[in-house]
Length: 286
Image (tube, rainbow, N blue to C red):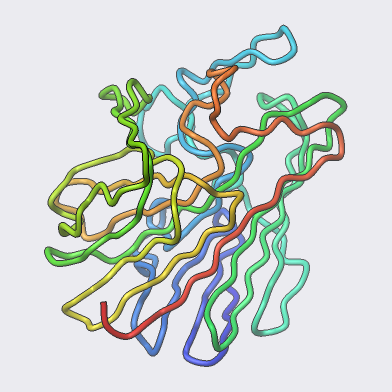
């Protein structure tokens, strides 16, 4: 575990468990749900690299060949591999000065045919937390690539989520995008309703502005400002849970199986990098 601190902020990293965040606090209050168990799914936040969310049946084509990836959801028989490989691998800490740290994950190639190197940089200041994630294609052929973050945020009956997006995907029962409900301008699809008012596991497209999670009962909120490289947001709000996941991501779900569509997926040439990030700030009020 690595603890970082600056101003009113405290961050604990767990490099050995998927390069994850174990907790993120402001003025002694949790902004992320603190780690609550032994699984990577019990952490406060983990990285998404080299892709976000699901690949349908773990199958896609690249350069005329079929790529197949095994299911990887811990403790389940979910048929679609999720979230890449970084969240299930240990990361190496290469820098740590007490207020910032750099972690690296190297993948040598395998089911995913391309070797790559992923880098996370986290930095605390009196203004908040800065997180960036990057991936470099270390293989000899173009690699599909995407990045993102998977934070778990505390939630109860009055927790509010606000975020303006142009589209909301309607998914099949197993989480694969089926139909896009798109508007001419970005709207708040939640319309200020408490997070528990809807049960969703889907992706919102073409975000406008930042994201906010508000806890009126605690008199505080979290502002999330993703970089332009993370234009979409996955929202996972399961019924009856004490958390909600608000995930800034670079591309839509199953993007690698949708050639010709504007999915946000990048194909990186040999040695090419993809990098994106977000800024997080605790604020008083809602």
